[in-house]
Length: 249
Image (cartoon, rainbow, N blue to C red):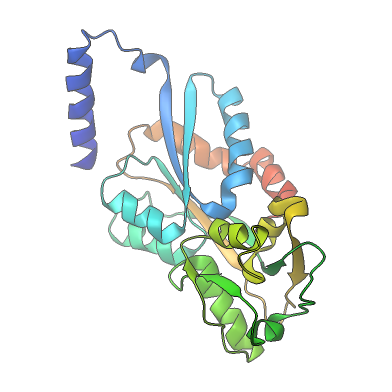
């Protein structure tokens, strides 16, 4: 029904312009992807476009639960890449994505701090220190749920504070000096560059994130959606993801 409505709207728009629109010249591919994939997917999108002339990839980056909500409300999405299997499962459970989804990358958590680590944070236990401003993603956001799992494994009470909608919001608050620390992915610390520093979280209390991807069942560009998913899983796509710090699933 959602796809049919969009087609009807496009048909009306074409009629109003006398059928002179050039929509047939370029295929729009709408990729909804977790915020932590921003830098890597932009590069993958550029490479995909070069390999598929006539396809214009448009990204929508946000927290995975926000993307799920947008898709369920009828947003024009062709591909969904989540930072966890829980949110992908919400779409799989309602038959809104092509099943099965495929895991294409892994990630780990890290503590992000200001350059030089002025508060001398060494681990999760330090984030419970009084007077420290710590930001986390909300508990329904994959990074937020993973962070709380890591605190539990470390025997540390999660600090109270803001509950951000995605990891980029956490990074922004730390890099702007609005927070002393936050828990994000190792890839986010790398993407922040000189604006931030990272404190490693030991493997025994860390949490492995698994990223699934799938075409949306009612995609407007189903062929290109399948091709994009295949490209992400190809050696070329994996090489880009690895360069940005993602691990193999």
